[in-house]
Image (cartoon, rainbow, N blue to C red; front, side, top):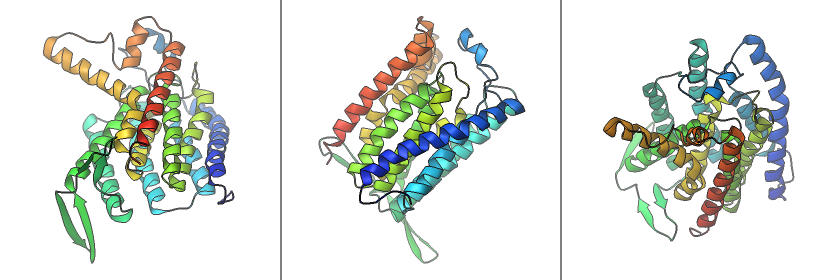
Amino acid sequence: MIGDPSYPTYQVFLAIGVAAILTGVLMVPFIRAMRTEGVGQQIRADGPHRHLIKQGTPTMGGVVILAGVLLTVALLAHWSYDLILCVLATFATAALGLLDDIESVAHKRSLGLTPQQKMAGLVVISVAFCVSAVNLCGIPPTITFPGGGVIDLGVLSTTLALGGVEVVVPWLYVLFVFLLMAGLSNAVNLTDGLDGLAGGTILIVMLALAAVAYSYDELNLAIFAAACGGACIGFLWFNCYPASIFMGDTGSLALGAAFASLAVLTKTEITSLVMGGLFIAEALSVIIQVVSFKSTGKRVFLMAPLHHHFEKKGWNETKVVIRFWIVSAAFAALGFALYFQLR
């Protein structure tokens, strides 16, 4: 472990810088290798026509983002149960995203795994994460609202004896954590549609979560969140418009899972949803569009997800991205302020 534990704030800031540098350095040979192998992004045929020029841009940059995170955490953090659990959930979801990216590239289409296959993987990951968080890390199966309201989701629980060890399965909380992890993973994935959009918005949220974890006296989780944010900085150097690399589902699904994992382990599930308000808006725009079109035959938005709606209205890509960064920062600040209402 690098750094003096007497100065924990220093370690968190160091994690940002180390992850940014490692990711930036590793990204150069990775992009070169992807170009040599002809591994490129497949663009939606029904998307904005201006995006067709992005066809073939190297993808799966999430591999390098996660490598930067893992190396930084290994250098700066202690491997506590909660950190190990957070890393495992993130990397398991990354593996799911990687399969999706490989499937997409191999078959030269914008869609990879089927929604059913993705959901099955997320069910396994979220259930294993939730049960482990409750039994190994002592996370209470409750959700807390700003103002002090608490809902106990452990009222319907089963205790299993496995190898002489009692394992509690709080079914309602398991369902809640699945919805949180699957929802945020897919919401971040939907946001990843413009150069720099997902990377910049998840960067903002991760830095806010690092501050939350630090104030929660969870230094290892703060370092992990800071490393995720720092890795996004290194990635954005190459992902800003016009992008030289995309993160792919490998990165977007994994970072969404990291977001959800940190929310559970710091017991800020509700305020974290406020911090990630932009991701929620992106996901809701897709749901509203589908429901409206299937029920009435009419579209509410010019195109979903929401960022494409504003492109269709004539905003250029950079304007959409920067304004969405601003909105994300506002949501993160609001969520962070609400967090202190729970303390």
